[in-house]
Length: 239
View 1 (tube, rainbow, N blue to C red):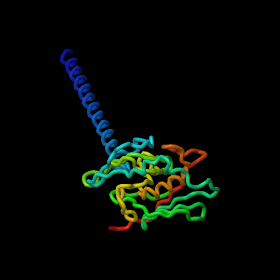
View 2 (view 1 turned 90 degrees about the vertical axis):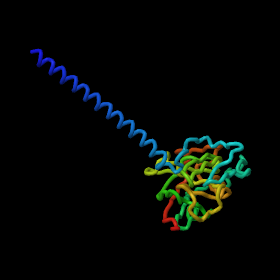
View 3 (view 1 turned 60 degrees about the vertical axis):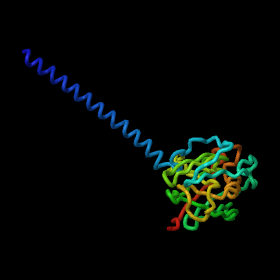
View 4 (view 1 turned 135 degrees about the vertical axis):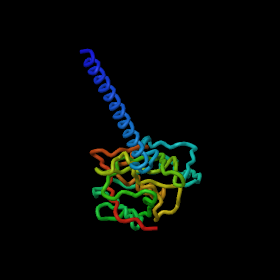
């Protein structure tokens, strides 16, 4: 019957067209989800929402200035001293442990039960500093950090003595770190986008002391030399 054959062909054509449209729609959804996840990773999951941890060379950028909160800032010349950050203590049998108290904005470093260093710090103001137990997984003599937006935008070269940390819930890719900060002098009060800011000279001492043992511009933890344990706790002071 010609009429039935035409009807079957038309039905098949409509079915093929519907399947094609469905596949196109599904493809558009997948692409949209991919783009959304990439943007979410950049804006929500990274302590430095633009740079994250893109450069792990630990190299110094010669002659660069930075931007912080609408101001042009320059890294102090002494930060470029390649001899800075060498180990200041010998090996110890005592376990090293760094404590960061958000409520007092203080970092205390212990060898066993002995307090060896205590420094004021600046933790998250525009984004929270995570709490819990973490391990240093890489130490960089210098790195660039960029993030924030609008009035809180920053782009900072040669961030000194950076010690990135992570745990099973806060991945390496999120870029949280202890590091020196040359762009403000308000230590003891929250001033960061999630990292733990320190005076450069204090960060240099901690960088030399903490595991893994510093070896060049970039030092990764290893099975034989795991990163120092960091415990972050407390509630930051309310403004």
